[in-house]
View: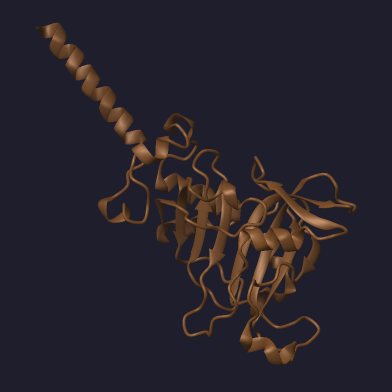
Length: 265
């Protein structure tokens, strides 16, 4: 009898330890995120997860983005599954799989409109896959970003063109904040969307994949037409190893033209 009680106590202790190591999804989050654990273990066994809690997801996010630790006090995370994503070439790696959605409420001011920062983190490898600021309240909307299919098609035209091969396996040497600092037009942007990817140029000089920050500044004026309406998007490639801007373009463009800029075309 004593032996059975001892085994039962040991089993309870082990169960408690395992439970403490698992991420918890609160009842009010289940509507936005997948049920735990049945829906999650279908895509990746929990033992393979590098990030198993929201606290760790927040800490890893600010490390990769180059944010000060003080922002942790106003950060939170929950598990979600993206229904749609518009990352060129790589959207299938983000859709339908569990991700940590980290919300950073307060971060160093680098752009004119500072809103909460939404960060999406891969729980398996602990990588930041995408981050974006929110469109400022009260500002008229501009044409939405193109779909992943449209963006990939536009970028895969004839001649030299950019290709995204995947996401880096390790932290970039250049943080998001440092990459953003390299963009002179950042101060007028109404929204920033960024991803750190492995990039190369087919038919160009950069044929070997290398880590870069792909940063889109939305709601800016045309560089050579300062009188134009602040409703355009510019896409920048910033080398994540040395921090140099390698290229910038307006491709991909929105799927539908923005009626608000018709007079500038």
